[in-house]
Image 1 (cartoon, rainbow, N blue to C red):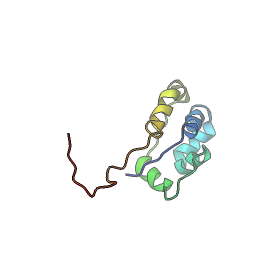
Image 2 (image 1 turned 30 degrees about the vertical axis):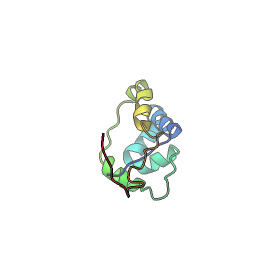
Image 3 (image 1 turned 135 degrees about the vertical axis):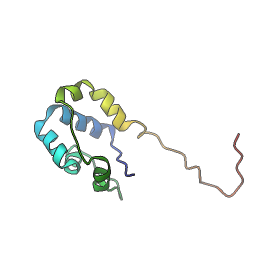
Length: 101
């Protein structure tokens, strides 16, 4: 499944626009990829935003602006949870035996 990694500043801007801007909300519902880019997301090399949108955002129904505004911090937290951590590559140096303890 395709994933999308948003920086905290882009996530915050995206959620703020969804909570305040009617034109942006309309764009997000009809052209999600363009809206994500307009919020400031810059795709990494090889990242396919269209694959993510197609798989994860086929039928968008947005909550009211007031509801998004009230939950802004929680939504930003969900969008950025775990993105600031590096996961160790467990397959590195797999020439020896491994013992689970």
